[in-house]
Length: 263
Image (cartoon, rainbow, N blue to C red; front, side, top):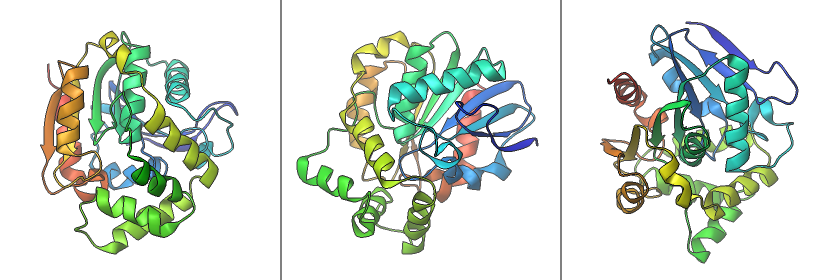
């Protein structure tokens, strides 16, 4: 499997890591806590003969850490579409985790003729996550307060797994994004609303729900996505919370690749 680690051909272009040389092209977008490296547990499991995967780092994250903002859904979409043109990809799927699931929808709405399918992994909907003030205060504190950040992560995992997993996610986040950028992206996925534009994308959409996810919960997903996208297929991932790429990577990859290869 071809592996081009953290490639960035031009200083203005977002960094990415590529796996595989297959004919089906797929962008993978990360969430709020950390860069594309959160997906590394899936790398040995990917089918590089059928797929070409490109894992990106948004502006301010990972190998794109020195790129200036804006840190917004619109900018992520513009950067992904620029990268697609650079790679010569005229047609591609977009997989997005959490905040990245919201960004994946933005890409599909902005380029509906290019996007063949969208997979949202415990995704934020196009209308964002309007958090109650007391919860939003905890999320804001997570940028600089590890106790607050741990509470957010552990809740999203269902408060059921080893604290070592939470520690791993927090260390990964600290090493890949600055607090002020982290805070800017919080505003992006809580205060942005492009739900009125969802009809622009009519293609296949799979929404994956973590069985134990207390953040992007089953109830929340079912109250939002079918209304925005009548074609959406909703599927629960057993024994997973908000981070199935870490919790149940083999099952996650199998589900994603089965959806992307269906007729």
